[in-house]
Image 1: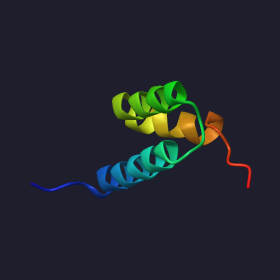
Image 2: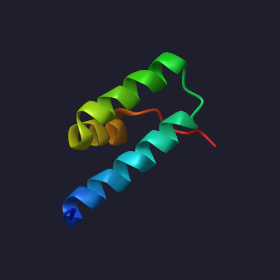
Image 3: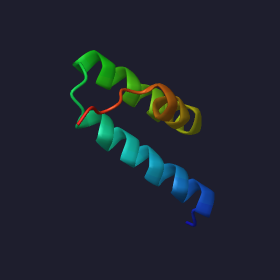
Image 4: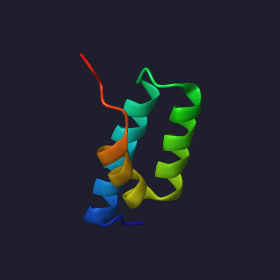
Length: 58
């Protein structure tokens, strides 16, 4: 089984986004909705999270 470079990049970005979501201080509902969105729509979900997701305030 081979994976294209584009697929590997999308997978890595989605894993990063989900990890970041689960470690955020957002509500549980927000975490679930963002995670499901990214799992169902990997590219569009990641882009939506990147643009509209919660920002960390450190």
